[in-house]
Amino acid sequence: MCDRDMRYLHVSDRWLLEYELERDQIIGQSHYDLFPDLAERWHEVYNRVLQGGTEGSPEEELTPRPDGQPFLLRVCVALKNPAIVGFHVRISDRQTR
Image (cartoon, rainbow, N blue to C red):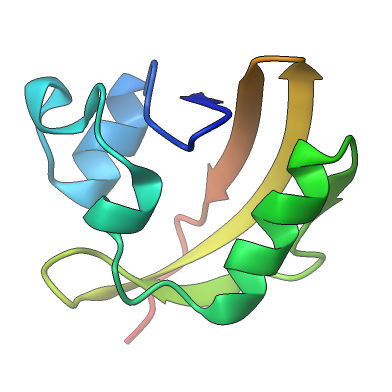
């Protein structure tokens, strides 16, 4: 979950494992600083969600981890209350190779 400035408030243990990061590297950090190569369309999705929408990826997408290794995920993003953006991420167990 992130605040309205897209700074992380909470992440799941699975999310940390998949992205190979530590909790103290994430909490309080900007999503955009952690993922500077984020596709522009995701900036647009987050902006629409901050206006009250709910959006996501209908299909699994090949996405790079911070180390550059690809993995498959499906994302749903919604405004949980006026201050918190919630992410539901389904990380595929299917191999990407």
